[in-house]
Image (cartoon, rainbow, N blue to C red; front, side):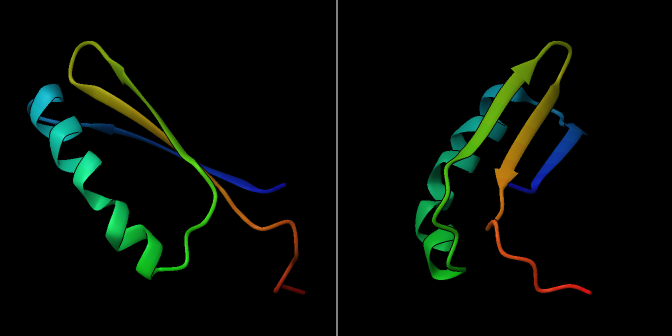
Length: 59
């Protein structure tokens, strides 16, 4: 199963997490059906992992 991992620096971990948790409806509208995992790391770093479909639309 393909996965995408994003590592990003943010200004405020608590503010980022609160905002991210409000995006459930947005992700469902974008047909995201797999869980989106994330971790908060000091200092001010987030890691997000999104699992993709097992099918391949590419070559």
